[in-house]
Each structure stands twice: as C-alpha cells, then as structure tokens.
Amino acid sequence: MPTQRDNPYGAFNFLVSLGGAQGNGDEGTPVGGFSDVSGLGFEVQYAEYRNGNDKVNAVRKIQNTFKVDDVTLKRGLIGSEDLFTWLKDVRDGRIDPRTVTITLLDEARNPVSSWKLRSAQPKKWTGPTLAAKGGTETAMEEIVFTCQEIEYQ
Image 1 (tube, one colour):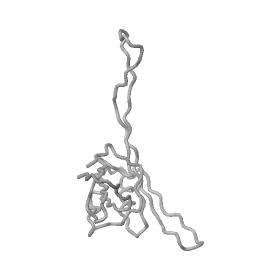
Image 2 (cartoon, one colour):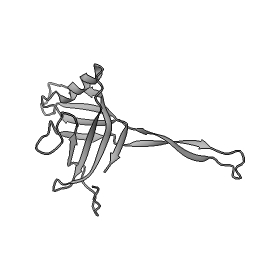
Image 3 (tube, rainbow, N blue to C red):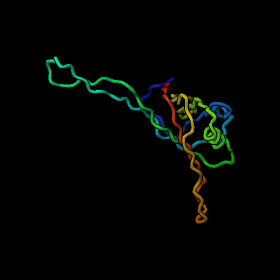
Image 4 (tube, rainbow, N blue to C red):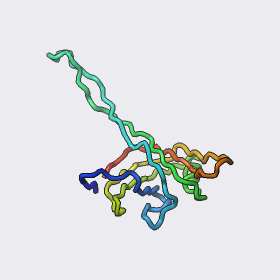
C-alpha cells in the first residue's frame, strides 16, 4: 500500500481503527477522531561477539531481540467510554489484545500507508485537564498502548 511520490505526505490526515467492537476505522463509523499519534517505533538490540581466534581485534555485532515503543493517542473527549472500558477490562484481568491500525491518508483521503500494532493493549489512560479560565481549551484524553509488533504496509 505505500505509495511513493516526490512531495512528502502531510501528517494531519489519518484514521485510527481500535479493532474489536470499537469500530473499523472507516470514515463513516468513527468512535471519536484522534488528533495525535506519537511513539511509532522499535529498536533492534545487538550483542557484541568476538571469536578468540579472530585475526582482527574487533567485535562483531549480532542482532538478537527487538523492543517496540509504546504508542500514544490523543483525542477530544466526546462522551464515549470505549477506551476507558477497554482499559478497565484489562485492569480487571481480562486479556483483550487487539490489532490497532493507523492509516495515513493523502489529500484526497485515499490510504497511502498504514501501521498495525499487533497484540496491542491499553497501558495508561489520562483524562482531561480541567481549568475554569479562558474557555478556549479542548478537553482531551490520552491513551498509551503497548504492543508486541509494529507492521508497516
């Protein structure tokens, strides 16, 4: 699905699908639009190794495990309890890993690439900061997911 072009895509057109009963992420069925996605990444760990009979006095780097970063999503509070319910279920011992999909869209809202968070589970929820001054802020909630693998398509 990745589409190559001369100009980079904007980071402001994307869809998030939470899997399970949370909707499929299509334009017609959003549970709540997300304003920010951050933390997409992983790191490969390397071990240093050298044979005792190597002619060169240097170590080799041998890849072994990899670590996936936690992914943070933010959205305006809309009265939907979907994320909090999922977090509460996990807190109460219900194992409910899902595939969370983040799809980047071009200017015409066509999918151009996506990231799938395999076996994603909610790790942390942060509610809105409420302040009685100004009245121009949006009530935002934040959810942090941990996952076992990030797949790029």
